[in-house]
Length: 526
Image (cartoon, rainbow, N blue to C red; front, side, top):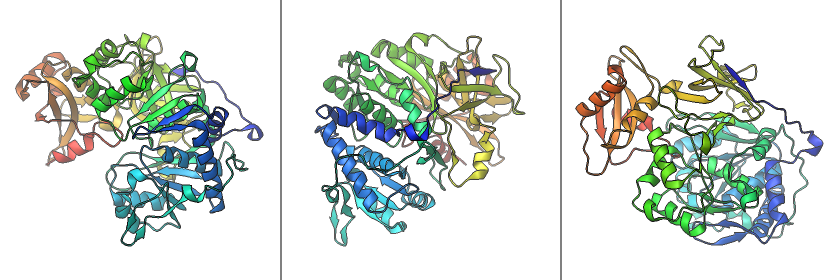
């Protein structure tokens, strides 16, 4: 089945305004408004931030950064990180983020693979720099602010200080819709993760997407406790362009998030489901003033219907289910009023495709499946990636005739709502059939002794896969494998029942906040 909500967004090069330029225009036009509250509680006005960013763009250009250059960022959740990203974009360079949580050798390989011409480091990542710098050979390393001075000298010159004499106005660089915007890397702990090349034109269309609270209800205030290098950065872009304020935190800590929501009157907060679960389980949630919240978009991994219903009781009708990916940006959305959509496998729907996106459910041979048929999710839109950086083989494997194979498995219901069964690569092949981990997780989370869980497959020495589950017990509970097996067998069948139970204090998460099933799998292999 194909759901077609596609419309064309045409932009001539002569009229094109890039995303970074659009954001800076909005900031400069209202210089007195508060643009940021830093992790240390300091306020930054829109005018000061815009002036700093324009000056930085001129400084980068003077140092040779231009269209086709690569500026790589070793940065955390700071205003300087966004300023550097916007400045590089104004100069026409592609931007690459080096994610926290990846090993120094992997970061070094990424730095080399993207042809880095300039590496910028902010205060949050100074501690990482000494591990990385001996492993890289880049033309220049600069700091975004005064860097620490070690025995063998500073990390690099302070490029923001060096830019102080530059003009606080947009640089005269022509950036077109087909110019490279950046390269985002998929998660991974070994080897070089895939680099997803994005262009300015598709990203400019993000600003027309219906994500975040309606500015007509008042200026948005976004809390960003997850990495700016990922979706929090995109939502920060939208917030700043729409006249709002970004409140930064260094990392996600549920108690600190709840405190900030109340103190800063937060309207918008992006969460992956595991982080949403942590908020729901925090003892302070029941006596925190959450009345300022307007939207909590969530997505990125499977959501439990049980926990989502609980979240509605706690936060109110502010949850928006979103389905997207780095290769395609926003794909579909489920509004608060539509959350009664539960699929036959117990999944919460991920909504309907947003305008500009076509979605098709296809069999392995590429034929479209009828309504209700479960198969691979393919999509076509103007926001699909340009391809994987320097990997035409990988690009050809997923991008054909304009259609992207997402690697997800799903189906449409009769009203055009999309449901995801799982990632195709997370499928556990067991004796007697196939097991999608999210289906078992959604069931187990309803067990009174289970607070959180992650289901994953582990191969034995005969290459046979077995269903394992890591469980965070509910307070005062200690579930046994026998009772969980009986619970799952009764409701879904024997092949879905976990064969091994791991009781854990917390489910390990990847740097972007998803359950780290690779770590779980590797920890329990053999």
